[in-house]
Structures are given as structure tokens and as C-alpha cells.
Length: 225
Image 1: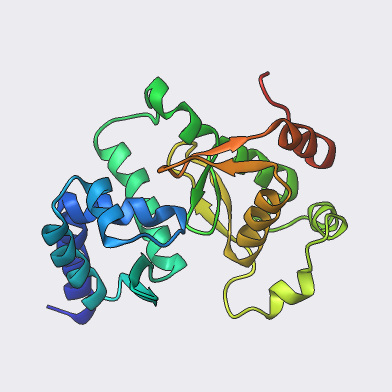
Image 2: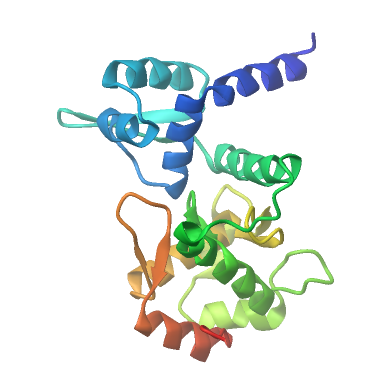
């Protein structure tokens, strides 16, 4: 068995356990969570959660940060997050689902965090407003200027050691939204501006009245149509 094949098999075994899969999905919002919080999200005992976390740490899928007496866990990288999001897309296709989730998931479909960037219908609409779809997903000249005028430092983002702008296939919309350093900068900006706010215990993001005006005035996006 080749190294790459073995790696795929090992990752599949790790993600294939429902408890570990639920814990990984809980970390997809980019926030660091304690073992107790992850146990609650996964519906397992703290002891079982500790065993799962040890395996994920050993495989390099997550990392742990110590702060005082507390240990916090988060996904190891944006690549891990992209893999998990891609599994959502593939899983829905294999199961024959078209991405229509129930009413309970309506907010997740509208806007959610995907590790460190924005996902959902709002993210796809924003990508449409900022990119030239005919040339893959890259910022258009107009789109880049909109972000510069909004206060995003493009030169600084291009110096970061990660992809500047890359497509991330949205599992509910089936079209790409923006990831990379520009995707992270946009999510930071809309949260700081109060355009979106996080939902407790969920990746869902709520668009505020201020956000509806901001997204419309700056990017031409409409809500409730």
C-alpha cells in the first residue's frame, strides 16, 4: 500500500467514527472548544471524548492549546476544514440528497462559518459580487477595489504564507465561496462590523439589520427577496 493510499485509509478510519466526526464538525466554526464541550456536541462521555481527541491529535487533524488549567481544541489547518466540507458535498451526493435541509437548518444554509471563512448562500452571493466566474474564482478588479475601499489590506494578505484567494465548494449551495486569506479577512471584517453575529453552540451566523444594509450598500446583495 502506498503512503498516500495508507494516509487516505487512516483519515477515513478517523473520520468514519460518528463520535469523532461530530467533534470535527463542531470545530468547523473555527473556535477552540474544550473536551467537555466537544463531548456534549458529540453526545459521548468525557472519557470517550478524551480517547477520540488523543487519536485526532496524534494524526495531526487537530491541535490543542493550553490556557491556564483549560485545554482547548481546534482544527489543525484550513486544509482539514476544506476536507471536511468537501465530505459534506460528497456525502450528500452519494445519499441522493439535493442539499434541501429541514427548516431547522435554514439559518445554516443562509450563513455559517466554515473554519475561518464565510459559507452558505450569503457567501456564494458575495463571491459572485467579488469575482469573475468566467476566470475561475479569483477577485475581479472591481471586487478587489470594493474590498480595498472597505479597509481590507490586500498587500498584507498577499504576504501571508497561505493561498490568497481560493474556491471552497459550498456543501449546501453546490457552488464555490471564497476561502484563503481573503476569505478569513472578510469573515473577520463582517463580524467586527456587526454585520453578522454568531449563534450559540452552532456554526450558523445571523445577518443583523446593520448587516443587511451593509451587504446591500457595499456589495449589492439583497435579503428576503
